[in-house]
Amino acid sequence: MEFDIIYPENKTDAFDAECIIAAVFFDDNELLSFGVKSNSPELDDSFYSYNQFEKAFELWSSPQYLSDFYNQFKTYFQTEYWRNIPEHTFMAEVNKSLNTIRKTIIEAMGNSTFYKLIEPLEASEEEKRLYASIRVKLKQGTIIGHYPFRFYAIEVEEKKCYLITGATIKVHKDMKKADNTEIELNKLEYTLQYINNNGINTKNTFVSQAL
Image (cartoon, rainbow, N blue to C red; front, side):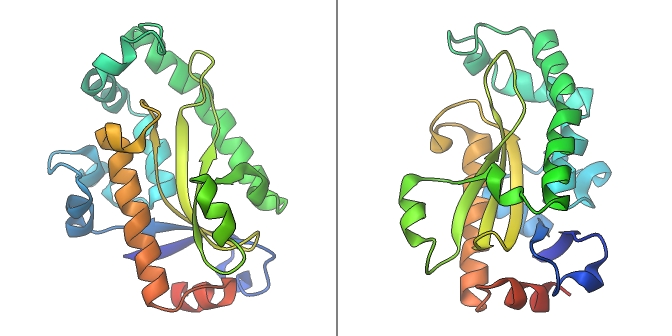
């Protein structure tokens, strides 16, 4: 596992920055251990070199990836919740949301309001916030009126340091009921354990490790 500081753009400013946003690089073995299939685009040379934040946008911009994703989870998309959304509509809705999602997140990084986009992964996480790093999620972008785009991260220190572990389009409300969100949950758990085991619990301890 490696860390890539996204904001501030000039990494030498990291210690002085009000808030640090970073993303993880996972290697092949780590991704496979999370449940990523060996033929997944996550492991493809075209996408492998991106950190988990940039990789999400690269994958969501790929027509082939979106088509494969739709067909992998077609049974969900044919439910009443998803209004039996056809593949071409799903792909068009994703494409329509991408620029807005990226713009919103990047602007929030730049004006130190990224934390306002964040919410705890579960209600129980809120209680831990004062004394521990917690799992968080970020929801942006819509598909037929739903908000299924998810970025997942570790809040290393509230309002000061966030580490993005992955992203996906959530197809079921229970993360463990769909393969894609279960993989993201595994990434979160693995990363949280890593930073806890290595004494990374503040912005400064994170920056010291990342640089």
